[in-house]
Amino acid sequence: MTSEARGSLGRILLIIGRLALAGIFLFAAYAKLKPQAAMGWSGTSIKVSLSMFAMQVDSYQLLPPQLVSPAAHFLPLFELFLGLWLLSGILLRYAALTTTLLLGAFFAMMVRTYRMGLEINCGCFGPGERLGVGTLLRDGSLLAFAIAVTIGAFVIRRRMQRNKAEPATASSAVSSSPQHAG
Amino acid sequence: MNSLTLSKLVAAKNWRMGALLIVFAGAALNAPAAFSQTTPTATKTSAKPAKKAASATDPAASATPVKTFGNKTAPITMEVFSDYQCPSCGSFFEQTLKPLLGPDGYVAAGKVYLVHRDFPLPMHAYSHQAARWANAAAKIGKFQDIDAALFDNQAGWSADGNIEKYVAAALSPTEFKRVQKLMVGCEPTSTTCPLDAYIVSDQELGKSVPVQATPTFVIFYKGQKYPASSGIVTYPILKQFFDSLLSQ
Image (cartoon, each protein chain N blue to C red):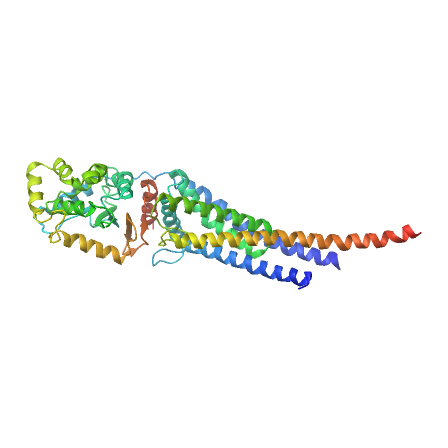
């Protein structure tokens, strides 16, 4: 495989990776914001859903009560923002890095809770899912995937910059050579 | 040509960046609302409805154990599946249910109707026996006292299985004698205890939730069942959820 073909394959994989991560984050935000009982979407239903998510955040016993609610209100909206950011592809390496850091924090929190023996709901994709080995494996795999996308984004960016720089150097070399000849 | 393509790209990126900034600004605008909700909203309520409810639900004459707190007509019903020997259930009772059941709590205010469900886990040696004592006390209308006594002294009886000592201390001698009578045939090794039917009935309900860990609680509001939550949730956060339901 030529380096050019490898490059385009890398770019395609990166697009697939970022779209998959975007989809996961958009779904996570949706699952936390959607009405939790048989009621339509409204400001009140979102408020109820966020209060329900606050109970899940609280059950991790990590944050003081005064920080639980701000965190529970911020996280789903940040996940929505991150999903849209990944979808847009703007400054992808930073979007992927932010995603990796967030997933890393989630994963560390889950491992700590599991080791403490707390039997709680994960809260990862809305209520009702128990934190256990399955959720740890899933979130661990997601973290590994995000790391791969981040590395890919940085590598491809560097390669693109190098490719841009090379023709410029070549052209400057070409334009300077007659002078030397002269 | 190149500069034209670049300007187009920049324009497109600016448009997408603008959209992202709008979303993030929305999230930031929501933050003050989140902070304001951390302050528990003071609700001027009277303790009268719960007192009325307590007298109305006097189960002395009832054959079935009454393991509820507050007014049945309260807008919110909270069903708690609990194991008397589980440390998290003990913490949940002390940190969350006590303030909820206290004079300034939402049960006393007539906003919440609390239902206790027994879900003794096989890993705890004495939790089933503790549930039997609680059900016997519930039959004579003394559930609230024994429920509190069992959780308050969880460490004590969990060590040696002497539940009777704490039940006796929480009741008057006459009441204790009545409870003891109901416990006839309910020795720890007995498999024919008549009180087990109530525990099994609660466990069956729990399986339909499904309860995977204790404590697990289910909240009902206006006929709507909300997804079950597990683990310890502090009272301010639980109260905030109740407030969000009541503000609908």
